Image 1: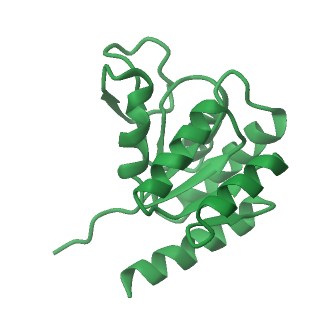
Image 2: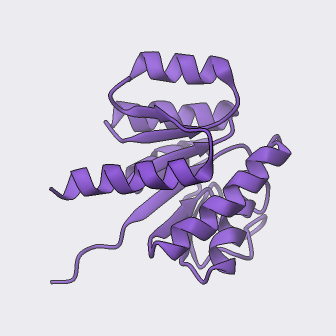
Length: 168
């Protein structure tokens, strides 16, 4: 039996994404694809979602977008598999439950909700953000499931560690 593909969720701000978030997300997408993992995002054509999806496509990766609506309006052209939910922000639970590991790249209210849902589901979360308050808040909330990293390389290394532990 062929094992299920590994899905890495990259969550982050849309319109409010900072330049550093965009650069990190693009590199995360590339690195996730090069590992042979599937990238999952919110699927929209803005911010971290767009940058991560574009990065994965640049490296010939497979991308999934969990969309808030029921049409392809605002979808990233770099999404291979679109899941239309018609759930608005409630789709955030689908995002995290469908991911083997969640990487939060940057911070926004939507990203914070995804992190909280992931922690509630005992998912591993990697924070790649310069938002000090968020780092402290989420690490205090779930020190066993939250890891703060300073760059993409460390985020990928932590994913590998989490995934190896999960399969053993």
